[in-house]
Amino acid sequence: MTRVTEWQPIATAYGSASYDVIQHESRWLNSGNCHHVILYVHVLSRSGSLTLYIETSDSLEGPWNNVASFISSGTAPTKVVLSRDLPQSDTNRLRRYVRWSLSQNADEICFRIRAQLS
Image 1 (cartoon, one colour):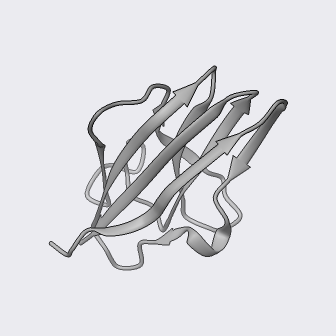
Image 2 (tube, helix red, strand yellow):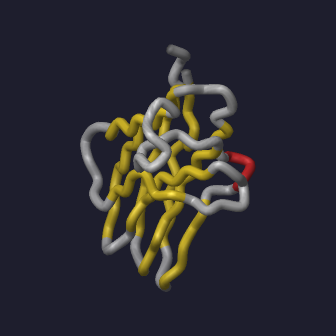
Image 3 (cartoon, helix red, strand yellow):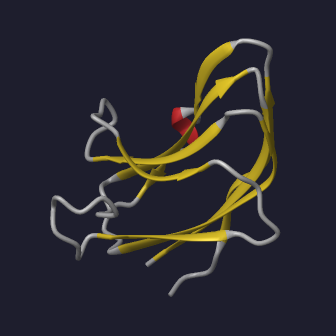
């Protein structure tokens, strides 16, 4: 296994209207030849009906598949394992690109994500 890196340092998003936020393309994970990506998602605080999604796609243009969603905060990170060894139809099948997105409706979230590629 490789070392764990800070993929998304602590980020805070908040707003007073409905909108979606997608991680900037320059920060998307390109899994390249990796067989596994392990994400450690830590939602430090959250209010309202906001949802944090982890998504994967075979191309930059999509379509993007939701592999995990987070609707509450916790005291410890949640481990998300993506693997190329899973069947093509499996939700947690690792595809080339990985990103996060937020679906927000006048809420607030503070989170961080660490990643390990192997």
